[in-house]
Amino acid sequence: MNTRQELTYEFLSNYRKLNKMTRAHLNDMLEPMLPFNEFMVLRLVHEQDHPNVSRIADLLSVSCSHITSVSERLIKKGYLTRVRASEDRRVVLLQLTEEGERVARTVEATITEYFHRKLENVTDDEMIVFNRLLKKLLEEN
Image (cartoon, rainbow, N blue to C red; front, top):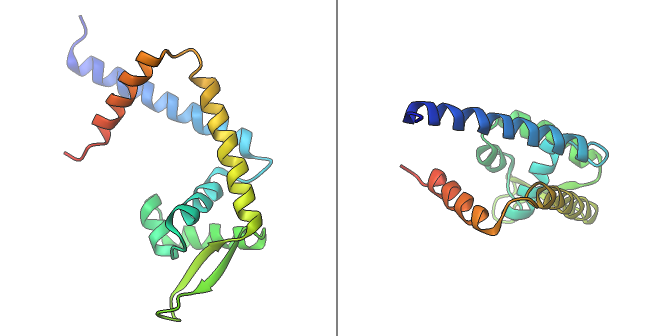
């Protein structure tokens, strides 16, 4: 019988392996379109409706300078634009271009298809239990 400590270690080890494998697979799949970190910024700009750099940095738990660098690359690719906030012209917001929207949708579909394939051997009951466990882990303590 496994002790709680052994089960926790096994969970942590498997979680790390899964995370590393998933990131590697997604990076390989997305390489022709854009790096995963650029996609995460595109996704957040879409979800947050014109966020500023500091908002995206907070959501991704990275520095503002990192997001500025990533957003500059996305602007050069034609996926993002800068817009001034109407209530305070000093505030610069990010906005997706039509091309940025198209790329974000394509990448999102690619990621969704990847997970459909990865989970095809998982039963509905297993998915229900797994989702319950994930929700439990995501709860604030």
